Length: 440
Ligand code: GLU
Ligand code: MG
Image 1 (spheres, rainbow, N blue to C red):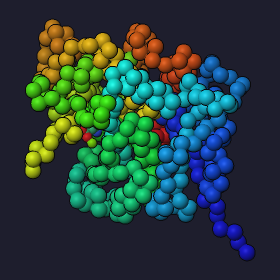
Image 2 (image 1 turned 90 degrees about the vertical axis):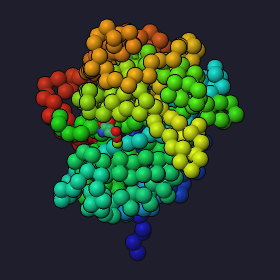
Image 3 (image 1 turned 180 degrees about the vertical axis):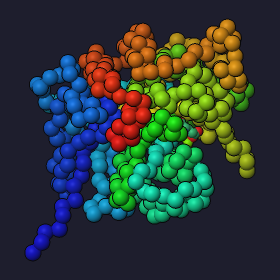
Image 4 (image 1 turned 120 degrees about the vertical axis):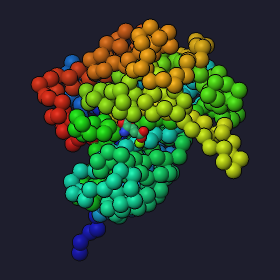
């Protein structure tokens, strides 16, 4: 008599390389692990995307932790088409006595959310909008955004819709995007922790659904030097203590409320350092170039896709209220970033703007490229770091940003980034894109 396969549940965390890793347990026995989790180790935080552990990390071979599943962050679906269900529960890394580990990315996000709330009474609603490309499908050519571009992949998109919906990520729109074999997925906004969890779940469900079709899905920021970039756009809005939306003020310039403007001002001030968390890899900077609808200046604009911070449109058709729709999009992120850390850094930067009562930043309609240096400086427009090296330098120059995280965390982050620079030192841009296409 043959025994049917035992479905497994992955208990996972996402690391500094933006890779989601974990260990599997028998799904039926997950309850046994809910209180104490599974084994984990500090040096795992120094894992790179290349199957190595970054050298000279602060952890070495010693020490043990637990990876504790969060039952509210279980993403399970039978609809990917795989032989057994996709089943993943996201966890927090804790010490052996159950206390939070100061370097756990998910815990770092929770702490940022709690501090924003404690200091200002505000909380965030967030949604990650993610682009990816499919490889190995041998699709016939199709027009960007066309019906045919999505239908030629059938049943990929309908299967994804079912899998994402069943897993509970609240998928909204599936797009055959502008780039070659590029797609985009949006989901409903949620609190920051859930939004980052969803970003992780969506990536893994997309990858599995593509794999089942015999293809691979890549979220790499640039899969070839001339390719259209794959962005991760982080939409956010502010809620007050009572849960009312407070990002919008009809009397304010472009509708941006005073509190939201201070939050944005903090982000703009710390943007060069923030990039190390939201665009942390070498190819991130192939994407962050002017005129590619990504982000390249410390620029807030009303509905302009070249701006790093874009005030998004609202619709007033059929009497719709703009207030709950109104949100801001941070465009300088990609999938080589850890979504928890990118969001934690955004919140910390925004909070610095609020506590410092920074004045509203200019909302600029002209492309910074078209303004002269003096005018740009007067408007606070600066070119973002254009390489990982420059992003590290910007990080080091920002004492406020360095204080957002535990010293051991910062040390590990810099180790991982330097290991990446050493690994890629002799590679041409095209080879780097190719490598990241397969790694992400
Ligand atoms: N693909 C663009 C990026 O790299 C974004 C295009 C868009 O959706 O506006 O961010
Ligand atoms: Mg898009």
